Image (cartoon, rainbow, N blue to C red; front, side, top):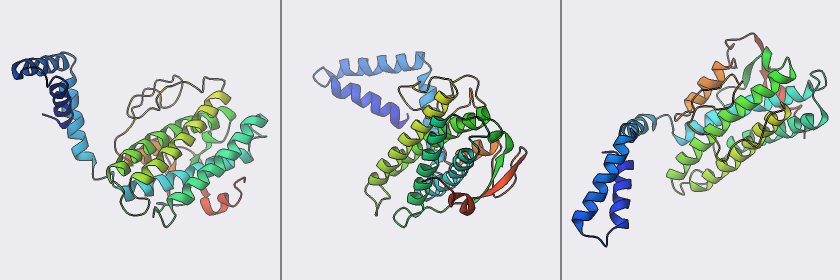
Length: 265
């Protein structure tokens, strides 16, 4: 029986501790039957099994490194997008949002690679597909999809760091809060990009984690989220980006050290 189901059953037993043991057993059995009729027993077992096999990639250091690399990408795309805003016919408000997002992504990178956190980017050389920078719609759609990947990654990181407790320095419950703060900023970036596409930005009560993308008309529509941090890289590569190598779509390389010097303040 999975840990999750044990917790459910223990909770039922605790809530009805004033009742006879036979009655509590009947309530637990009823809950098991209800969960089984909804197909939840199999789901919980698969979730528990997945958790057992995904702990290894989800080490704090790996999450910090992947997140730092993702922020290298985000700094580049937002900075170059801002520089090309007039050519792409982007309005003044959206251009200002791109400038702010570029700086915020750079700050995220600086925090992740600080001595306190200890993250290290995998590469500073990013292949950006042409369709991410060739049109207003392409740029903003890329940001919507990319920011959702970042949201998923930071929600995963929040869980992992919270489990480590206080840890050493920021590697623990304190840094879990920092990742939650990062996630909030990425959610704002996603909402503003959607709004600039003429779509509803304020579109959800809960940020999406492992569920499938319900927003229609995106390259990621119907794509599930992830439980392993390395899947963030896989999804970005699937969108045409390359980390130190050419991606699977026509594009060009950008060097972080060069672009970040031009990032708007």
